Length: 535
Image 1 (cartoon, rainbow, N blue to C red):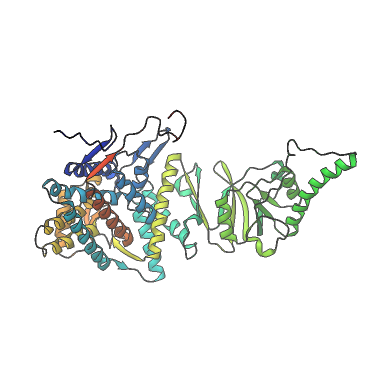
Image 2: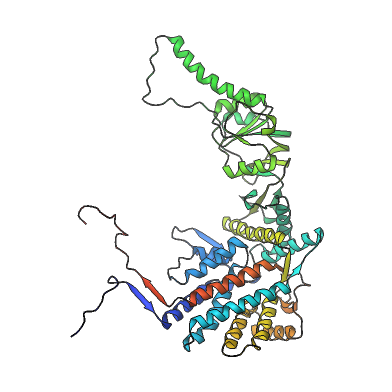
């Protein structure tokens, strides 16, 4: 007697499993890596991406490119996740981590095809990763001393910027970024570095303001009569509306004579004038508010030689508070001197086609602003992304003051050490360790291919140098030769490599452990509300 088939999943559901599914996942991850492979290194190329709304983005930042790609393959989204985590945690090495993860999977693919159980591979990779991180800790160089630390931070920032669009001006921006990070307090909050983009001019006109600068807010007629330059400034930061409000609609007020009506009108004006007088009596000569400041208040302040601006963005107010001290006030009834921000000088200046307000020589000076200049809008946007990566690197390097040589040097040395260790292992695990070691050589190989060098020849020279004990031998892209990258100041914080190795290995293990993908069929309407009549 035939048994009826058991239908478990809805008709149209995709269900793939077994060895073929693991290989399919590996192939998808390799395709994702291929989309960012050519952006690696100083000679890496850029990608132009047009989103669904027609907005164009030019970038060679791995995390930015993968975020803009609309990846639908389920397992391949793991690569996007590790690039994002690397960007959030360290800031740089987003392309490296994706290439390394894809290469580990590529090296493991033949074993899967030959019928090796994925769990054996995952266990071997996990052990190899632990040993790699221990060797990395032994290789990293700690930097001591204030001057040496600054030099190290500048070199790390310059190494990060060398693969970006702004590589020609990397030393100019590296020094600017280190100065910016050094102005912050011990917690190094990223939001205290403001980046303002102004079209026009060239990159060299970009500058660092050790204080706060923001674009001139919307203003009324009386604004032009206000002074635009002060020294010994007291700043009142408000979250108070200083304008007359329109009467409520449908409100009813019964008045018997004209004097009562006049009293109502006068009361409204007196409330506003009372607020303005209290602000003036506090001794503040610059008034900034998150909420609007009306034309009456603007003219009133102008008559008393005070500067005011309304509708200031919240992040600018926060930075101003961090730089000048004081507090954001929600009432003007008791403004004490301690609640006012203080800075050495305030002025308004034309930057390109916009007018900017500058607050300098701030009393607390724990915030700063980078004013970026440049031609095309996309170019300035990519400059901002590049500087964000460099700022993240300098922040991390300042907290974890140990470095390794970049340019493929550390990857070749780790690959050699893993191979040496693998020779002492018995059984088939040795082959898995050797494959893991081989994956690390992909970084220097890709650097060579992107620079138009003979990858085979350069890698042979690198292997020879590392076998002779030259542990910092790497690729010097600018000389197109093999050299000592530690002496050439191609430095990277060891944290970048540590995070990249961990994230790439975890992603590879995750993809190898997936042997079945079930994709539910989508309802045509995108889902309906349950319990509706007629269902």
